[in-house]
Image (tube, rainbow, N blue to C red; front, side):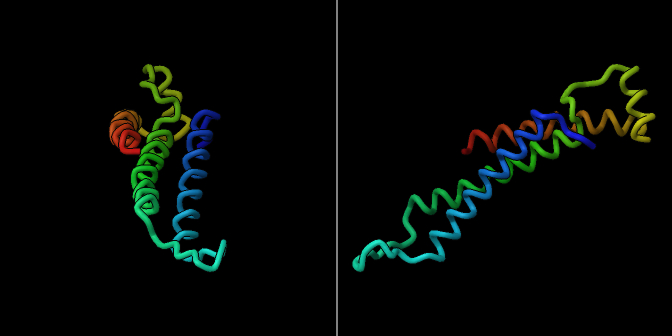
Length: 117
């Protein structure tokens, strides 16, 4: 299934943010300060906040990706459009409706995760 440009940009930007956060967490955990000899940098409160920011970001990314995968158009189809989709995908009308409803329900936790950021 091919996702449209808007969906791909959301997924790509979320992936980039998650990767940057993971890189920062790993860097702060594994590296030593070599700026000067008296530097005693350790894990600080801002580092913990950055680490915890990964959880809502990952949750939002997963919810949005699943939502767009289940229903790329993010709309409810008319009967004619649903019949065309049934022929293209081999799914029943009940499966298509279930995917559309589940896709809309996944947007609620995605918004909650977004508010947590």
